[in-house]
Structures are given as structure tokens and as C-alpha cells.
Length: 155
Image 1: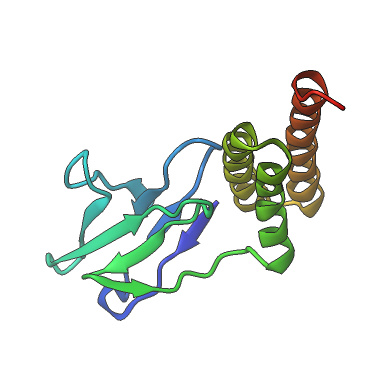
Image 2: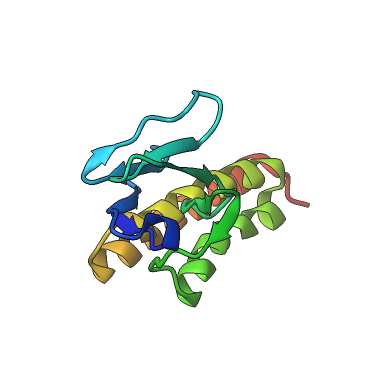
């Protein structure tokens, strides 16, 4: 999915944040071509405008939300994206595994929440978005339940 960045410093420019696969990091696209990072250690990009000037755009990763925080010249901006209240509930649902299984639940919950968040952003059709998200949540809870039944002693 591609999301257009609207900002007064980028007027007349086609700059987009692209979120592709489940585990890929977001990319910055300018006029249909990917922009290379300034360095491999930062998510900072130089966007060369058509008038020759540069605008610095930074993409900051969030823990659960796969959509990065976009900063232009150091100031955060809002980018239109498609997550609503139900989507956030689905992202948090795997985190409840911490209560059931402890440390394994934490690892499994974080991993599952990240995958669910990506699925909610990269799929266009609601059936696919919610169906695959519920499938991942179901698998996570099944693994946690199997661990709980197998390894936790009952009295």
C-alpha cells in the first residue's frame, strides 16, 4: 500500500510511504522511484524537489504500528492511513497472551501483533484484512494453548 505525504514543503511533489510485505520496512517513494536512505543506520531520506532544493524526511518505526511516524524537517506530520478502532483491537488482542502464558506469550504476542498490524495495512479487501488477521490471532492462541496444556502442571 502507498500513502501520499501532503506537506507545504512538498507541494507539487509526489512523495509516498510504501508498505509492502509483512516483514519489510517501509520505503519512501518519490515520483514512482524509491529513495535511498542517507545512511544504513538511520531512516532519513533526502527528497530532491524539482526546483533543486532538498527536503529531509525521516521515517520512525513504532513498536506495534507498522506505519512509521513521518517527520519532515524534524516536525511530525499526519499521514492518512486506514487503521480504525477495530483494527487497533485486533492488534492488541495477541498481547493478551502475556497473561495466559507469560514470557512465551510476550514473544508470541509481539510477533503476532506485528503481523496483524501489517496485514491490516497491506490488504485492500476487508475480508482478506480481517480474515487473515483473525487467522494469525487464532494460530497464536492455539500455540499458547498447546504450550499451556503441555507444560503447565495441573493440580
